[in-house]
Image (cartoon, rainbow, N blue to C red):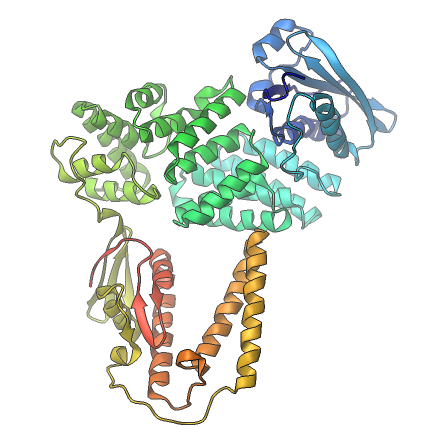
Length: 591
């Protein structure tokens, strides 16, 4: 047909329950939601969000169908038939209000959700001449799942849509009940991850660490069971973004987009995160598509639109959207974006107004009696931009506390990573990314301080030990046969690591990498330069081992009081015969 390359829009209306089947009501509610998800995974087929379709039930009214502004409508009903359920399906041409396809299924309660796959294929087969019949993901196909587990999952998802901390906690209980029934139910793990993600997205700050770690942990578990779970991939992309692992973040987000290009909420989340990764143009396309799929609830996405247009330097458009938003229903630091918009259009009176609102929010929700400097540093740190941002000249303006033009050069390049590592008596006072901590004195901390003061330089382990280079000759630690065996094992591990990464099995990847590092570390203790067997009794070997141990021990102790700093040091410090600090991000240290 001539419309083959034209994207088809479809709406799935709530199925009607024509008889009293109380026990199956949760399943029937989920039936519509699952069909929306299934259809949304087809290229060339756009599906309206359930937020926009759940109020439409009467398909006999042509005006109702016209209001949806779609090409086709899927609707149906449930009716009891002895001990089974009769499911009637209709595909309607919305413009002509004519039935294109009608089907019927007779299912038991246990097999009812298997009918979703059959319905999906029936509808797509009818439309396949008009859409690109290329299903990117078959992950919607449910494995043999216990009916009780499925019902618990449905109840959890229904409650979670309320969007409150209380509903997230209640939904999590249902997901855990589902896992008691079926410990390998991937959708339940995704549900738990999403519940933590909701807390994190709503910026429940006293649970920030708990929420972010929970979202990450359960997304990994879901993907271990279903590597194509697009929602878990989106959540994982965000957790990687906020830990500034940008390549991993973008990989997960783009795979999520490939797995489902038509889920409105998922599209909007990815659009938001792509802005941080430096892709605002692409984010705008996803934002517009999400609004098209959610036509009756466009106000739900206004904060995201403001953010996207701001980073595209379309300040008037950003302000137009921002004025429609209730500040008490937005992010804690959303007033900063409004202040920055006014800054770029030279309305300094409103700059100060909205900046003051943010500082008040910060003091109320984050830190009592906070200074403007503390509020500014927090706002810079909490937004994980990979590169440039239109906020930077505004940050510069606030930092200087005087009127400057947007074109001026930024002066706070170091605020984001300003840090110190200073010994005070028998303690070390450390500051990193706006967080302070005290660490008990140790030789490892002294080693770290030396490395921080000379970044990107190689320092011999004997220098850190305060000794002169001296070598003693003794027997070989490892023979050539054992060395070859070790090397073969390392090659095997590297191959397995690549396979695990390709399969997106992050738990296995982490385990294999730990095994690899342990093996390499053991081998490095036994081999000298150029892979020659190391001599026992070597002064350098003793110094290397001692310095490595005390630096790692010091980082472990730092992790107990300042995990972010410990992670940065672990990623940036290399130990061995030569030790070095090569920072993963720009840091200005006071040592």
